[in-house]
Image 1: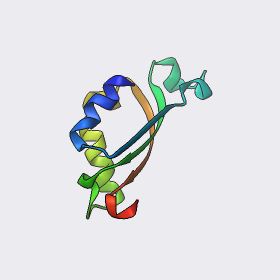
Image 2: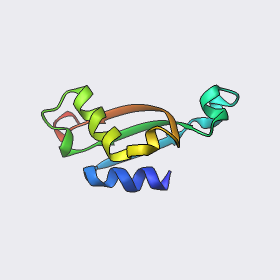
Image 3: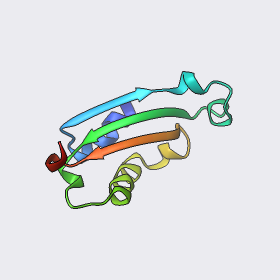
Length: 84
């Protein structure tokens, strides 16, 4: 989880909450392959004027290859300062 936080720091979040739900998915194919299940709440000025898809792309780009290995599922709630 520290690596996820480190990579998303590029978005300069004003709020960052990451919950590891991997234990709830024990036995799931993604869990067996080592990929974790996470819930992310993140607020950042980087999301201003961007729709949900563009916000998620920013997050996925920052996480890079982690989305193919360490992270199997990521539920995202991303807000701009105007939405807080």
